[in-house]
Length: 527
Image (cartoon, rainbow, N blue to C red):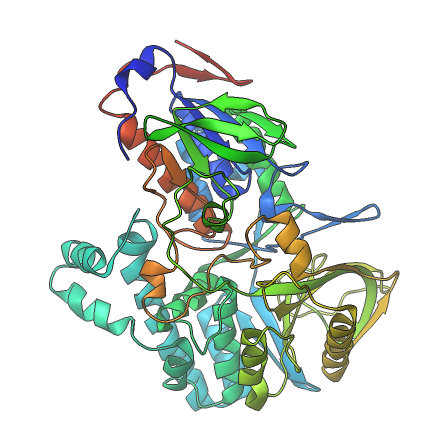
């Protein structure tokens, strides 16, 4: 980033952060902690982005992410801010990562403990398949270790820079590690080398959807998601919205001034660099730097005015979803916190072919989050059944053309969803009609996203380097953050993007800002 002119530093540099999702919260808090004058603007009525809860009467349910992985990202973030994650958020580690079902009597739990998963797969499929799972887990860990610092924590990786960083970190042995991440093949093809049971290939192929992509197109490097989950999955007491709330409070203690209901409609540019933002009501806010934590496609769509850079790489949108939030009584199949209900393995490709063609899948995989259940070992709940909070999710195409899904399409998909759950033995008695959220609803909530929940899709090996823009832009003073930019979607990745954005802004200031103010609680800065 070009340094901010030294004439600006007779006062604390002013930064406007647009979007109070996790990336914006992280960058705002870090910049305020460094002494900058930070305003955080949020278009919605409340902060949190995709971690905002869904309200169902008096109930609050997770509306997006349902568990936390890579908690070290937040431990490090809170520590940098002089705080402790454990002091503000109660986390419970899941023993059961997810419960999977294919039909009556065919279910499999994956565990945080490797040996328990090996034993479960041996009983579910075969000892040979369990041995192949062990080998796959080792491979996934190697991929994660190879890409962690050189790629995920790097501000702008390229094939050349990734190779250089790995070689610098690991020496000549790093070249072999790069070859073993299988960058030039798809996840689905690589899974075929490990799993002969098509159900297990289907199970681990689904990890591509965590990045909003098809396992038949996504790079094999996404096998690292399996390692991230097995390393630790955490439930947040009070739901994921609690984490967002604590990040907001932490940012405000650093001096961040949060304004909700403030929509930015234009970037202001003076002498070739960003100089502030204009709001929908005409108000202008001057700034020496701007962090944009919305969907990066808002730049190319012209939603931030004519001076916003429009040189982002073309990419297909990621998956969207249909979600149903409800209170219900359940029986038959014993739910865990995370539950996945698959259709026949032979028809798995048809699910993604339909989505690629802009249609809802004919035989959808159904994810069910039972928010009141713990991710502990299988055990029947004592006492009478009580209503519980459920979120059901089916992958859907993004609303790329703005036509939206019809009521008939959605009704047909919902009927297929309930059929899938009944086929696995799960009985669901709804207390009231569920609250439906459609791709067109997500598109309205997140401008320029087209309803895609994960930014651009990961298609082919180049997607890791070209599909997602870096935080640094061609407009001096403007930095991007959020799940649509590097290093990718998901709560921890978006937080890392916010950290990278803050570091890039501070690096641009380092040579010209000598007198750093101290951030005071309540949003005031004093020399």
